[in-house]
Length: 588
Image 1 (tube, helix red, strand yellow):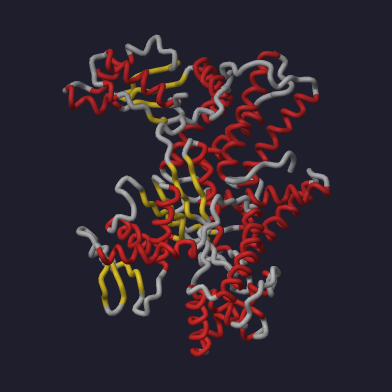
Image 2 (image 1 turned 180 degrees about the vertical axis):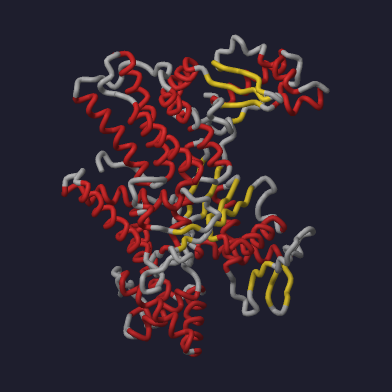
């Protein structure tokens, strides 16, 4: 199904061509003077120089061929040569009727679907998720959903950090606390216990304790480094402990991501890439890309035209240990071998930009990816408190994600109970649905690359540009449709008619923008565009609601039309919030 803007551009381009001008001048844009018109074409201004003719004369010629237009109810020339346009109500209603029958609501599926891996989440095991993990999870999940909606095969990978020094630290601390555990007995040859020797709470206490000790006690740190090395060499008891750590951590991570309505297709880990490292490094050596520099193995990645210094990409430290760069490069090797993606997109804190410049350039230079495979980095900004600094607890510590979600849910519960719009037994569940919308919309409504202030009071408000306001609009529509059915109405009766008021037409015009919005949100990796769109749709609907007697309309045909328009509005809003990763309750 073509977009409304495409159909208008085709009509205007045809008029330019019939008037003897190049049809490429027939571009249509949204009017910057909505008091005068809905759309405009400035092509005559651009054509004036090429045709050595006054722009208003060119515009007059073009408009003369729009007299019998099926799309425009108004096409008039305004000096010095603008063409002001208004869409015909009859055409608009026919467009929405077609949109209602389209499963994708006017979104055009990708002609050449791509396989895209999105790397998002990225937590380290044995540590609780904190607010710093929020943006990657929320933005990545939304991009995955939008990509699938427009027809691509999108694979979400959590990419767990599970293979570094943190593992050695945990193993070392466990050994100090419980030296008699069978995992530390080198003579043991039996089956290790199925039950982990720790809970998630204990594990989350062990790591920071061990990390703190390693910073003050060099012998302890060396012991942890040796434990890390032995684990990576495959020491049997340590591998069994590692499996326990993974099982306990991943179970907890899945529980917390589930609260965010975030899911992953792959639960791949850094350790999964380890088998690819030796051959990858050897090949880079043999091909002359990798060389020793002060004992470390590096690959030059600077390029002509760099305006700032781009250091070499380090593959191995002087002691032969691998780094994040090594693991990320090996992960690319693994992904190319297993999934053959057309694009790998990393949704990571923008402060890691240099790291990914080095990794991407190294992967390209050494041939780890073919030329046609795209490597992308969406660096997101920081989530800050009202003081403009990274979001913290009242005590100044890093807030656990679980705590943030609970605080928002409690705030929403209080507001919902005060409104007395939901029965007590349903209020807690409703609060969780609305709380998630508050968090996700609060984050996604900001451009991903920018820092933003996480303002709990504003994000949980039922008014303004917030998640709860969007949900309130959807719930209002549901309520009207339910009442209509309760009064004996049939939701399938009737069709959308031409608008009878400017306020109705405005809502209809807003709905036509869905397809363009979703496609551009994916192309530009910009979920905030969908947020801005549904805020405009919600405002348009609420204005229509306050000015229109929907259920008391006496003209049966017109009443049916209103009900069909409400159903389409509901579909557009519900589809949009699903793409953003949250849903609406039935009442709130």
